Length: 353
Image (cartoon, rainbow, N blue to C red; front, top):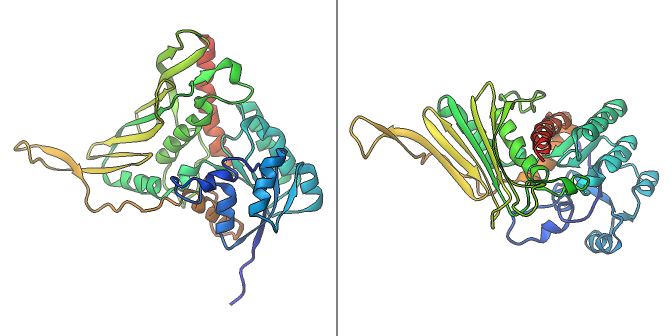
C-alpha cells in the first residue's frame, strides 16, 4: 500500500487562535490552528511567522523543528508550504492574505472573517481566482459534529417555521471608532452567528458549501444605543427571510455580563436548540398533559457527540480537499456571503448614527 502524501504547512499569526488557545484547559482541544495542524498525521508543520517577537519565541519553544520568521516575505522567499494559514488580526487580513495568495500555496486557510469589509474581501477573492489559490475560511461551526447533527435533524422535524439566533456579550455590537480594527461584536462574533444560520439553511448537496446569499429581505426591528455615546450600538434585532424559512430573527447584545451563543430552530413537528453548551433535540409526541394534544419531548434517540472536533474536522477537510476527495465545506464565497449580510446591517446602523 502506497504511503499517502504529507502536506507541509506554515502559519502566519501565532496569537490566540493561531496558537495559545491550545493551552486553554476548559476548551475542547485542539482549539488553535497550530494544535490542529500538529494533530493531523497528514500535515507537517514547517514554519511560523509573527511580527511580535515574544509571541513568536513562545511558539518556537513548542515547535523547535520549525523555521520562524518575523516577516512573511522572508517566509515565502525561503519556503514553499502546501498550506498557508493566515490567523492574524482582522485589520491585517487583506495585506497578509494577498501576500500568501501570491506565493501560490495549494490551499490558503483564512481565519474568519474574510476581511474588515466586503470591498477588501472581494479583492482577496479576485486575487485568489487570478492565482488559482483555493481558500478555506475558518468558520469553525461548519465543521462541528453537533451543528452537523442539527442540520441533519432538521430533515426529520417537518417544515421549518422560525429560526432565532442570539449572541450575547459585553462587547459593543458596533462602534464607528473601531471600524478600522474590527473590534466590535457584529464582525468579531456576529460572523459566526450569521454564517452558521447560512450553513443550516443550505441544501444538503455532497457536503459542498452554498455559493448564494440565503438571508434576504432584511428588516431592523430594534436598535439600542449606548446612553453616554450614541455612536455606539449595544443591542440590535434583525429580521430576515429565506426560501427555506420565512421567519429568521437575529439578536445581538453588547450589554450582557456573560457570553452566549445559540440558535433555535422551530418547525412544524419539532424544535432544536444548539449553541455553546446547548444541545436540545425535540419531537412532537402525544401529550402527557392534555388529551387529544401533542407536545414536544426530548428525542432520546439522538446521540450528542462527546467531542465536536470543530478544529480537527476543519484540517481534515483541508487534507481531503487536497487529496481530491471532498469539496471545501467553508469557502471564500460563503465567507463573503456572511460578510455581505454583516455589512448590510452595519450600513443600516451607520445611517442612523
